[in-house]
Each structure stands twice: as structure tokens, then as C-alpha cells.
Image (tube, rainbow over all chains, first blue to last red; front, side):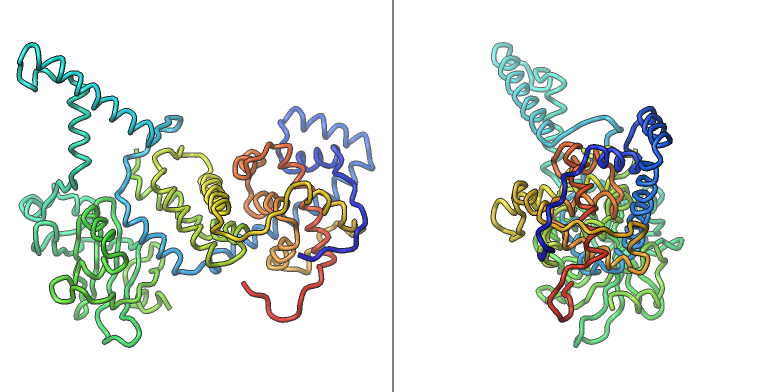
Length: 294
Length: 181
């Protein structure tokens, strides 16, 4: 950092700070009215305020122009990395209404307290009376035990088979507008998209030097991750449970996305695709795939 | 009640570019900045249930980002060169006041010039100006992000703007050659 010659700069005056606060719109209305009345009575200060306003307006316009350019300066790779790291994390509980505060510490504390209650309940209830557990455990403790059990397992309420039996009850159909064609296994379905899905995700292309393969798209829904593959001019979709995918992602990192499709034939291979960001919100098209990640 | 992944997508992910610009201004090198941004979004995702809908998500993300930066700095993982406040105040006294035409000195300059000029403003002052004039945050939000009282925000902002004006009108000499991004 280089600086100009050492001529003292006077400390900012209170007036100058107040003027900035007024021009920045940070003064309460009543105070601003008083401030304006003061300016109206003092032409020198009014002229100074006008100059300062011009300066700040110009600065903020430059700021707006700068913000417009930010997206083009951000590497696509960074957004891809962020999305990958988020995929590895299980989805969190739903948001609470505004004004409600909940922290992980509180949740942990509540679980511990409930578990302690359960133990106390069991001890007090079972030992002297030798009653069955279900009768001995107080209701809140039962809820806590259920929650702990649920957290320990990977929730997968919908299997592919059940989606085939009752497509309208399938979250895949509800979430992404898909029709289930057949099952690859319990957690994997081959789908057909009923309506055009607005794609928010990535498009994968063959990495440099590898044989040209189909383009692959990846869409993250709330409960599922959808891969769309362009094969012989038509699209096929593969859905996996998002929790299962997250678990896989923890083990394999970025390779997980290819492992899902290639596990039977290409297990152990490095990710053969180069993944670029697809146009935000754009429907899938060959052009979009060709244009992405380059 | 909205679904967190969708809401996070719409509320937070559009601010990746803003966060990267802020991270660059803190870390001063693209590699560390990208790392900071990635960590920020991961922590925001984990803590998203604590976010209050309707409040400023950008300010919330910036607060997380700066805390991570400070933590990393304390652990020696980053190498920024912030100066103590006393030293900065002395430096403030050592900068020449230039009588300039205050009427839009950047009329002939693009946003890049403003960003480059900001590089020559001492760090805490630069952050205040950046957060207010480039990112459009309020004094209160800036105070929360920088963890300083609003009075300090006002003072840093005013001084930062004065330095910026000087740098725009009379840019400091810089070594020849292309500027690294």
C-alpha cells in the first residue's frame, strides 16, 4: 500500500459524520427534518451538502454498476464446489416462522434432557411397579426416543416399488413431475419427465481426452437428486434419494454423481465428466449443454 | 412454510458473487477467498434454520464470512495484513488532503477504477465503504458484520470515503505491469 505525502488530515468533524448519516438515509424522520431545516437556514452548509450528495450518488451508482459485473467475475467452478459441498450435507429441518429462535445447542440440550427424563421415567416407573415399558415411559420421553431413532436411520419413505404402485403418491411425481417407468433397485427409478422441468443444476460433459459420451444433467430437488441423460436423441431420468446420495457423496466426493449411474460397470473409475453450470433456470436443451462449462 | 433447500437456493445462493467479492477484499487472494466462500455457504446451510426470513440474507452471509475469516486469521491460516486501529489513525493523519472537485470525480472512470481505488484505502475504512456504497448495507448491518458500534461505522465510512475520493482523483503510484486479479 502506498500513500501520498504526510500532510495531516483533520479528524472527521461531527457535522461531517451527521451529514453522511443524513444523506445515507440513516436518520430517523424527525431528526432528518430538523437537520434539513438547519441546512435551509445555512447556505454554506447547504452547498456543502449538495456537493456531498453528488459525490455519494456517483459512488453508489458506480457501486451498482460494479454489482452488475460481479456474476461474470465469479468462477463457475466456485458455484459448483459450493453446490457439491451442500449436497454432502443432509437437508435441515424446515424454517421456523420469523421471530422464532432455535439453535443446534438447544436441540441437543432438549434431546439430552428428554433422554434423561426417559431414563428417570423408566427407572422410577419400571423398578417398583414392574409395569410394561410402554406404560412406564412418559409421553414426552417417548417422543424424544422416537426422534433419536429416526435420526439414526436414513429416512427413505418412498421406494421405487411403491412409486410404481401408486405414482400419484410418489414424491418424485409430486416434486418433479416425473412418471416412473421402471425400477433399477429399491432406491433408484428410471423416469420420464411429464412436463418440461425448469433445470437448476449442472450439465456434465466428457472430460478432455475421454470418449464422447452422453451429456448428463443433475437437478437437486428437496428429497431427490435427478440425473438426466441424453441418449439417442431422447432424455432418460434417474432419481436417487437425496439422503442416500449425500451419504455416497461423503465417501466419494464429486465422483458420487457419476458413481450413481456407473456403479455397475465403472466402479472405481475417476469421474469421467467435466461438470459445468447449466444456465440458471433454463429448460434442458442440447444448446444449453453445449454452452455450459466452457 | 417453505422447503429449506428451495428457500436456501433462492435466498442465499444468488449472493455467491457478492460473497466472493467480499471475501477477496478480506483475504486478498483468490484461492483463500474461494475457500472462505465455500465454507461460508456450508455453515450458512447448516445454520439456515436460524435464519429469519425477510431479513437481509446478504448481511447474514457476510457476517458468517467475516467470522470465518477472523477465526482463520487467528489460527494463522490466512495471511492478511490488517493494521491496529491506532496505526490506522496515524496513517489517516499522514494522508494528504487534496482539494478536489467533489462533483463526481469518477465520471470518466468505470466501476473497476472504484474497486482499484478502494484497494488503496486502509482495510477497516475500506470495508465500511465497500459494505455501504458497493453492497448497499445499512449502518446497523455493517456494524454487525464488522462487529463494531454504529458510531465507529460512521467514522470509518466517512474517512474511507475521503481516502477513496483522493485515490480516485489522484491515484497512488503503482508498479508497472499487468494487475493480478
